[in-house]
Image (cartoon, rainbow, N blue to C red; front, side, top):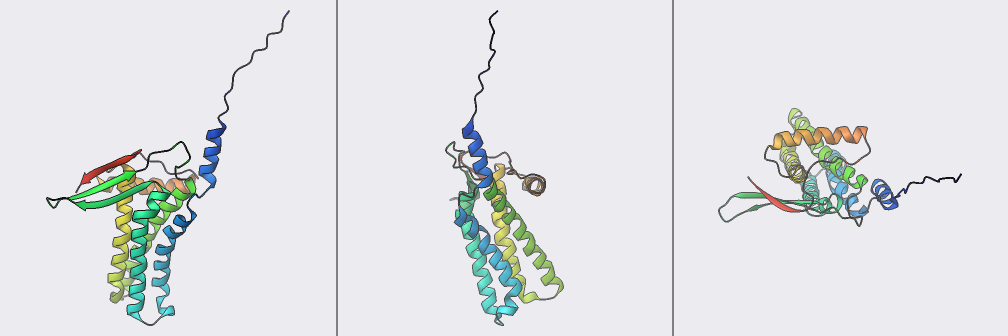
Length: 213
C-alpha cells in the first residue's frame, strides 16, 4: 500500500521572536537613559554630600535646585517620550481652567516600541527618587535642619509632578488619581521584583487627550 505522509504546515514567525529578544535585551536610547537617572541621582548625592564638598549653603542650595530643575525638564520633555513613548503637559485655557494633556506614541511594527529595560529603568527612577526626597523631608524635619526644608520640598514637588503626570498619561487619564496611583505603584513594584517583563497597563495606543482639572 501507499504510505501517506501526513504533514502540517507550521509557520515560524522569526520576526516576532527577534523583536521580543530585541525588546528584552536592548537599550535603544542610552543617552536618554543615562540622563533620566543622572540629574535626579546627582541631586540626591549632592544634597547628601554637600557638607563634604562645600561649606557654602547658598552654593549647595542653588546646585541641587538646578539639578532638580534640569531633571524635571528632561524627564518631562525628553526621556519620557523616548523611553516609554509618553508625554504630558498642563495648560490653562482662555477661561482660566487647567487642562492636563497627554500623548502616547502609537505602537509601531518597525521596532520603535520602548524596550523592557528602558521602561523598567524609567519607571523605577520615576518612583524611587521621590520616595527618597520624602525620607529627606522627615529627616530634615526631625533633625531641625529647617534651612534645607524649602529645598527638600522643591525636590518632592518637582519629581512628584512628573510621577503624577506620567501615571495619568500611562493609565489613560482616569479621574480618580488616588486609586490609579496606588494600583499602578503596587503593580509596578510587584512585577519588577517577580517578573522581568515590562509593566503593562491599559492606556492610549496613540494620539492625545485632555483631562480637565
